[in-house]
Image (tube, rainbow, N blue to C red):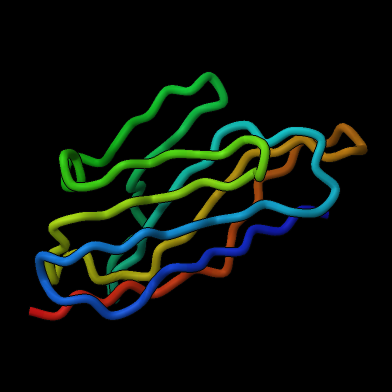
Length: 120
């Protein structure tokens, strides 16, 4: 099995910054794409940032210029640095990863989510 554990959420004032982390562990052969999503109350889950296995990154229009996704392949960890946070960024942030297990099975794994609250 493969697990994702997120950390770094919390309460921050508007204009502030947070850095989220997501570490994959377990029976991992390789971690391919790693993605951050978020889900605000009453809203659908939406993609925030995507880091492909080839090293390409994409961002939601609402987050371009305000966040950076990065990863440490040696640690199977992805980060999301968010700056200039706004109240509308308040959401539960979820990490998602496409992995190949040591049994050579393809897995899509979700973390438990970490809450980000931005106060005005």
